[in-house]
Amino acid sequence: MTTLERTTRAERDAGRKALVPFFTAGYPSEAAFLDLVRAAADAGCRTVEVGIPFSDPVADGPLIQASSLAALRGGMTLRRALDLTARATAATGVGAVVMSYANPVLRLGAAEFATRARDAGVVGAILPDVPHEEAAPWRGPLAAAGLPLIELIAPTTDGARVAAIAGEARGFLYLVALTGVTGAVADPAAHAAALVARARAVTDLPCYVGFGVADPDGARRVARAADGVIVGSALVRLLQSAADARSGVRSVADFLHGMREALAPPAREVTS
Image 1 (cartoon, rainbow, N blue to C red):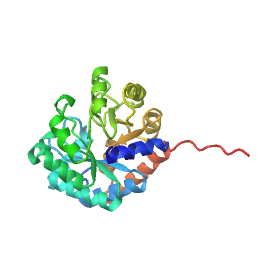
Image 2 (cartoon, rainbow, N blue to C red; image 1 turned 90 degrees about the vertical axis):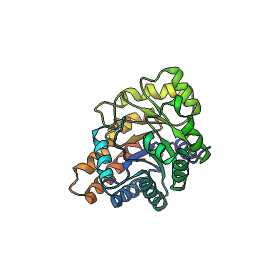
Image 3 (cartoon, rainbow, N blue to C red; image 1 turned 120 degrees about the vertical axis):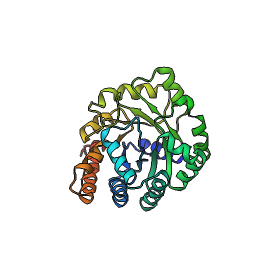
């Protein structure tokens, strides 16, 4: 069992809904990125998703695309992002799941990427433009480094493909709550229960829902079915609208604490 899967199963076994915030490596600055990961750890997040900036994304909506472009203009690269992630994981103890597109990893080499990622405190990787049927050359080097390749299941994924993906999945299943890119305006809870039910019919792996989770109420409703929620665009929106990086980090910290409160189990009544 991978480190990530031990974490996700332990959180579920404890009756705790996981909160996984997404941060773009180097955005709005390297120092602010480190502060954001610290804020996530302070809010009780045991895992963060780190986006590797890329110029031609297929899954990211406008907000995350803009954050990636800003980081790229600041000189961010895959190697630099992994070095930055290493600093963040060492300082906080959280595990990082990196989200990259295929081209940067191909340029570095899948085996070197896996080794560097493991050494940086990475516990899993997402490659959204690598189809399940073509993932073996990526999955092998990652597995050799003890890292799972986390694949995505969408509302449009048919039953046979859900079973095939779930059969090889490790860490957690990433369930995409809507058809579209990150940050799309939709109600993620509308699809969450059905998606989770389809996944749980073929696996007992923890199920996390992302894409479209934008506020504590949405997170609470998604978590009625899911084992965890992933939030990204809402955090980038807070950073982009802040007067400066410091106030942006404070806004994100407050938001994450609000999300954590929304995901907390109901308090039990004490009877005399």
